Structure formats: structure tokens, C-alpha cells
Length: 298
Image 1 (cartoon, rainbow, N blue to C red):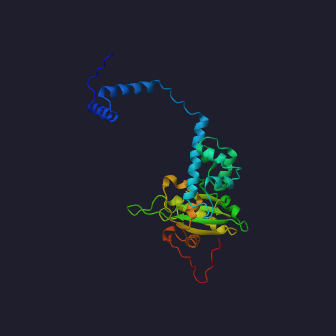
Image 2 (cartoon, rainbow, N blue to C red):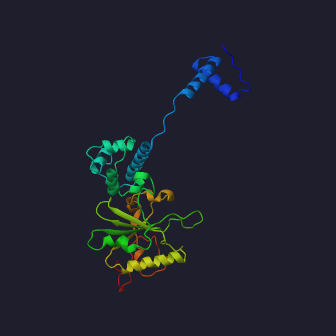
Image 3 (cartoon, rainbow, N blue to C red):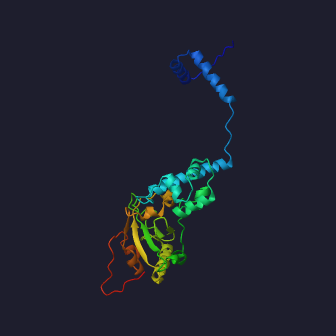
């Protein structure tokens, strides 16, 4: 039989071999032979084939589906009496059985585009995110100056309610407003809590810490509000915990949840021309216009 001598064998490996030999009730030589044999066998074992593009996509789409349904539950999108287990979700989506949805989540079956569209339409998630992971989980387009285009579907008699939600985030350790403080979210709400269109303004903030560009954009928005006599707006303050990296991965219901979204009173002074630095943005009680002064109809 051949003999093997190893020079400068590390002390820690020698100690581990001694411990393994004691556990397996073998001599040091026997444990060494056993370990080397297993190692050589592993070199000859066939390596697993790389997953195909289709298999990789199926698994990734299934993981996104799982993330979506978990987020919908976390954001309290489902009514208290509504079941959100997979069989009931499949039923709500018009599936003949839960098998396809379950197989898609497990990555065993490709997510049909028709089912993906029904999921996106019903729960308001981004179709692009659902099928290839691009962008955020829910669409929050930056409205820019296209206010009329976004709010036009909410003309009187449409049954659509407009809610303007100001994010109120805590100050940093030095007393400065956080990056997201004063962000204005805009929602068109109709019927149940699924049917919500969302957007936001990234060109101005509802606070007094803006530069000239922000003030100019805010002036344009206020001018739009004052001229929109066929629209009705209501304002709110939201103190929901916000992680900037996943801000748009929350369903609109998260920001409209009464747990952390309260009726506010900054809309009247804003439309009346008050300077942003003079408005109490966090005031929760309804604003009372001076006696005899005309009310601003929005």
C-alpha cells in the first residue's frame, strides 16, 4: 500500500481531523482516508446544469408574486372579512382553480401574461415590475406639470374622489427636515380600496425649505387648484413609516390608512396665497375662514 506524508500540515486542520475521528470512532489515519475519498468522489460527480432562461424567469416571477401578496397583506389592502389565502386570491382573480397561481409562485409554471394583467389591474401593481422586475412594485408617476391630465377623470359626477396627502416625516438629529418631508402624493380613489390611481410631485415640497425653482412649481400647482372649479380636493397628513429605498413599493392604501393618515387643513391657506413658510402643515383641525370672507371652492 502507498504511503502519504504531508509536510507543514496546519495545526487547526489536524485538530479538526482528531475531533472528527473521535466522533466517528475511527483512527486519525482512517478519518483522513475517508475524507480524501469523499473529496475525490465530489470531483467526479456531474455538476448541476445551469437553469435555462425560462426556468430562471419562472422562479423570479414566482418570488415577485409572493412579495406582492405579502405586501398587500402588510399594507392592509384586504378588507377584514376578505380571505387572502391563495385559493381565495385565485377565485377573486377569476381562475378556474388555484393550481396555476400556486405553480407560478412555486416557479414550476410560467406566469401567463393574461393572469399577470388581471393581477396588475385588480391590485394596482406595476405590470413591468411583475413580469421582469423593473421599476417599483406600484406605479407612482411624477406628475410634473400635467395636473389636468391626471385629475381630469375626477370631474364632478364621476364618483372619483381626489385626496392630496402630504408626507410628514421626522426631522434628523440636527433638526433638519428629512428628504421626504413635504412630499405630496396625489390619489384618485373610486369604489373599493383597490381602485386607486397614484402619483406624486417631485418638483416642489409642501414646506418652507424650497428654493426658487420649487416655489415656482408650487405656484403653478396652486394656480391649477384655484382654477379647477369642476374638481373637489381633500387634504391629509400621513405619518406612515417610510423607507426611502422602498417608498414606491407600498400600495396606496398604506398611505391612506386611517392609522397614520389624518384629515389636515393646509389646503385653504395654500390656495389663499399664504407663504409656505407661514403655513402650519401639521395642523389637524378644519380651517375656519374669516367671518364674511368667501370660501375657496376646490
